[in-house]
Image (cartoon, rainbow, N blue to C red; front, side, top):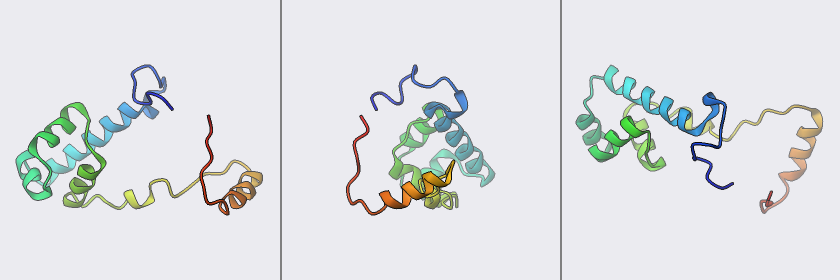
Length: 111
């Protein structure tokens, strides 16, 4: 999966990694403002540098570790625990195949 974050990879804007990051950054900023926190205040409480918070709000770029540290301060961690846990199946065959593949110990390459 080469260059998943490049400008040309995704056409549907709602499912574009850049659009998702922008939405997360915008919601983080809104939550920060709801709590009457400045960027510096959030930096102080979270342990994330002011520069990282500014970069996230302006360019939507942040490490997962820093995003989680911010989420803790903003009391917004509940959905991180669910990330990648629920799979939506289209048929009973997919459920059966998923149960069979759970028994495997190593991942498969899908090149």
